[in-house]
Image 1 (tube, rainbow, N blue to C red):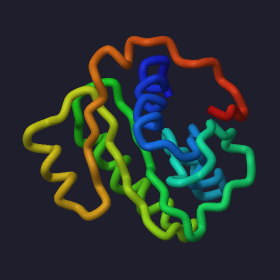
Image 2: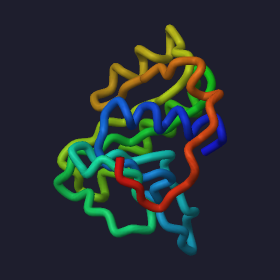
Image 3: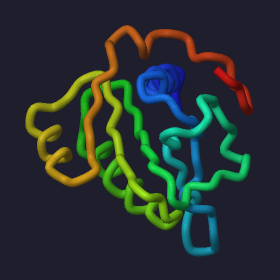
Image 4: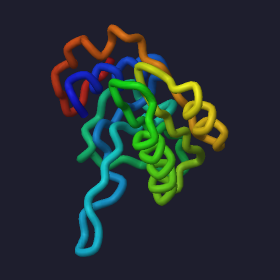
Length: 143
């Protein structure tokens, strides 16, 4: 994530709580595929902390939120990330998946199109959040 997107992601996480895992790998690099990480996974109801993606994480049977963040208006590229990230996370067998496009501006045509799909949501972050400095990177911190 960029210096503007990390504060946005953490702002959203503070709204919903749970365990935040930034840059969570949903596909490992292999001979016929590239590594793919989502901007963040939030384990709903998990311990309220920031966890490092290298820690072992149990997603099976959990309610999770997949977050894809862009410090701009919702666009088709981000919509694709949101939609397919949810599909990729299903391999971990969570109980439920909500996939969020976290942006600082919605699009009046694209927003409703994305939200017409079950489990897809557009969240608008306040404009001043993306300009704040990100909290220091920590492997794990309780809040």
